[in-house]
Image 1 (spheres, rainbow, N blue to C red):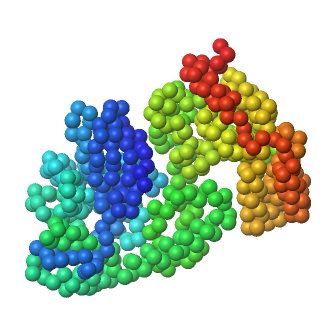
Image 2 (spheres, one colour):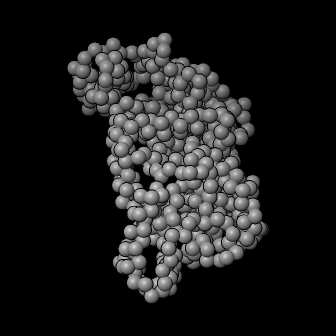
Amino acid sequence: MKVPFDEVDPFNGRRVRGLLTRSRRRRGDLQITHVDGRPCPQHVRGTPRIPHLRTTDLDGSAGVHVYEKLDGTNVLLFRYHDADGQPLVSYKTRHRPFLSQQPYGDFVALWRQILAEHAHAMPTLLQSRFAFGFELYGSQLPQICSAQVSLAARLLFALDPDTGQLHHPRQDPAWAFPSPEALASFPSDAAPAAVAAEIRTLVEQRHITHGSEGAVAFWQGARGTVVRKCKPAAVRDAQAHYRALYAHGKQLLRQQLPASAVHEGVAAHADTLPPTASAQRALEVVQEHLRLEQTFRSSSAVPRRATGLDAPGSQLLWRVVWGSHMWGMHTPTSDRDRCVVYLASTATLLRGVFAPEQLAPHRRGQHRKEAGGDCHVYELGRLVQLLQRGSITALFGVISPLVEQAHGSAHQELLELLHAHPSVVFHRGLLRHVRDSQGYMANAQTPEHFRKHLRIACRNLQFGITLFEEGRYALRPSAAETEQELHALLARMNDSVRRCSLPEALPAEPLDAYVMRWRHHGWRSSDPTR
């Protein structure tokens, strides 16, 4: 899988655009397409995946060098160039194009601290043609093996950018950056099976005496250098044990939170529990990961690239309140959730970022926190696409009567189009919402929680019945008390759809013309009637 990126290199100030590879084998490779907006195609090799030690894929060697395996974060010194051929050096982790500020640490600041500490050793590495891999570790970073230092780094390998071959950290005496402890070396005539057995014995003994995470062996053979890692059984068991607990904790968490809240980002921080952790502790750690990431994403102190509504030139079209307030079912403690629709700038469209919301964790729109509740943000073209696909959420973002802001006539025009062309295209979206509510009802811990989602399902069914029987949008609250009422409404809505004479889809021509009209005029004015 390749993920697009568009970021500023924090060590050179250059804006770099391209694709980041996230496959199991080649995770971290960069396919750079532009530097500072100018085409500059090039491929950057990332830190390769290091397999576990097996004897079946090893042949006779010209020597084996074994180093301690440290438990930390991999940082790669890599090289690229701009459109004029000027060479540049920067640093990255496996899953990011550059070092950046993350929920678990400001890696730019941490790495600058390492560079200052080892300033005497960096010139030799910078003058080389190789890329270099480091391990950043210490008590400031999450890890399964305890660290005796606050922050440190070690040179792990040199990476040939042309061939992808790895070289052990002491191959060139000029590389003065500290490397991990050398645990053993074996001569060229040593049998592979015997060497592997000795390495396994060594890592088991070191884990008992030093708490080590294992070893990395550089096997120099006929095919070049082959690199393998070897972890002690206790570490492998601890990581496997935690992954099982983590999955159980995540399952428990899904019963307490909407599925959209348990996003994939927390899975990258799995190996942080000792093997004695309970399932409850696993749940606590998952919740802590979510809390940290939520704090990070909502913090105004954290700089982030301006996209979507925040991008220069984007125009706010309208903002409405939806959720319980829209239905008249709110209480004094209810959040005031909002939907915002904007028009993308010319620069955003020409860069190819037509719908930045698609890259957000919440697929229905760009999800962000605001004071007093959640806010979903849609680009106008994306909103119309979702309407044509039958998204009931997008529909509510247009028909809500609680309009806080409206610039120009874009909102009123789209609202009139929807009223003029009712359709059964929203039937499936309504059914999905009802099924979601039924899932929450099944896992409800209190009668109040059950009743809340029962009434959410019933109000959506009432909405659908009115739409399919009368061809109009009516937002009426529900006071349902029993699940039988839900089943009765569901049967009636499905029957209404079978007897409905409304068209199967929204008309494409007037909606497409609406979007194009606002795109054409909106770049010059917030109101195309001017």
